[in-house]
Length: 506
Image (cartoon, rainbow, N blue to C red; front, top):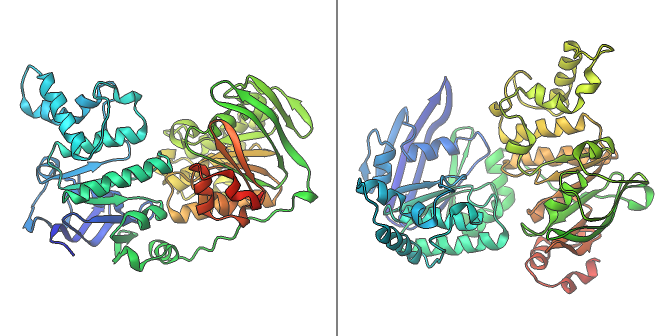
């Protein structure tokens, strides 16, 4: 391995009597691409914040360039060449790309007058270092997530970055954008810059990593050359469990159609969308971000009124213009962003669960009955195995996987005939993802008709019996049997590989 840039030895950190990290070691070589993996709550974020000087370890040693750094803080970490790009990117949306890239120089100059020519020159220089070109005058709020990442990386370079930590950098970008990001990472590596890459997407870990460090329950499991790992072994090392994914099977000939969509269209978003959904079926919809998949789902739930087309539920034609229309028809929708669209994050777990069934909990005088509320809250916490000491705890106290269970419970409480799940496992670790998938499959086996929208192709193929590929607002291809195609074939199709390549699949 190359000469070490960063070395952590026996790092221990305790919060309120709970060990977040227990004698964890981590070493990163100069110019190395290193992946850090573990389930939610394993200690990854705490370790990153210790490297960045946000948290101080209770014990242990941190060496940068072979020199021990005692009581390192955020400023000292940055001066040592460590830059952390968090998932939210920490950019100023109302400022230009140039201003965001050169922000640190502007602050460090401590000048009352800003030299805008210098600002542009610094920003342009940082972009050129990684072979990128962005309109320097464009406000960051108008850039795609992928372009914002380039701005964040360029900003790190202006601080003489020697180690860039990327935390869930690919959670909201397309496959093509991921490929481009990896090209940028390769350019950084050629410049001798180390990368610590954190991701729940294990296929990306294998694609980018040279070495992988695994932590579980605050302890280091080990570090391994990526070439010595495969998906099953990595999952086992992360979770201590073996998960076996079997394609979801379904006999469409024996059940009734629950939802029919005909020629659904909305100018600039989607056009001529037609499909049927049967009782007990899990229909997958995938495609690049911007393909129209989420816009179509929102139309079915009354949040995006279409210009034309027909929606029929259980044989009854409906005009759905608001969520209440959809709910009354038996349609539920789990949104892509659970934090801002799926939960009242500061409200209790119980209140989040019963928000959809308040009318059912009223007595004859239209007053909410506490006993009924508590029974409903406790029942759903138990049914969905939500890990919490009490339904009174706030939703923001839960892990991502348990938050998603709360959103599921909220909609399952209305006993929907059709459940639309948009990105049901975004930002969720492998163990929680497996559990969510089991819940979804169980619902389908009980007769619920489910639409699963995801850009994770293995998730779609493992859990759906049939798949629709969307591109540019249209259904490009239907795959009638998801078990008959590979993830690589679907990736090729989504990326423009040609519908003819899947002719045998339908």
